[in-house]
Length: 266
Image (cartoon, rainbow, N blue to C red):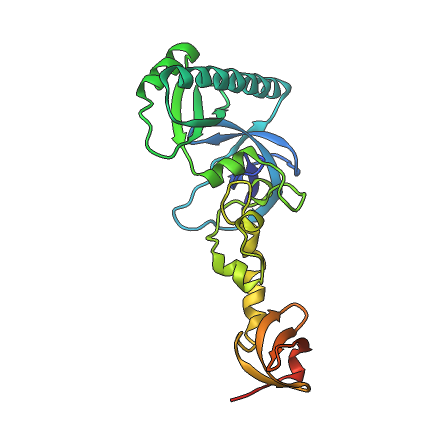
């Protein structure tokens, strides 16, 4: 029976399963693992748990060793290399006049490869840039163009709620977000109030969407004619969390009534 441990390579990155072998690991331990790109430096986010059988055709890479002091020193050198590569690449971009926004550089564990992350409104011919980077840095170079949401996820930041933005804190995969979700939750449709740091609709709109959909099944639609203790009127707003609706009476007065105290009029 194998013991499976969850490893994360980036603070907000995806959690990958590895075979922990005979190692005794706890959450927060730093480890060196085998990856398709060679050895990688990761952090244990879920303690080893036994698993009798893996899905057919699936094999797991192994934990190579618990990170040593030398490994931590190598990681610190990699961080310094990333900073230097970032500064040099910015200078090259300005020299070549490329329309691209470089925002992050990532080195693999043995510093043999550097990945440059950037955003751009269109395609960028960075062949000359790559030649300049390889010549000066002496490592393999990969240029990776990503979307604006991925930029926010990698860079991080503070959202309008005052907390670390969700995509950087815990979201592993982006889910579709639509303006309909904001409407269903009776939120202001002002773009500045429902957009995140990336300029797109906030991911948190999806968190309670299913609950709102379920609660609204018991509510009459907006515009439905109903009868209240104060007369007939039409529903103009819903408050699904308190179970109340706002009704505009025939004389123009608006009143708020519990859902169980109104009667729909056919």
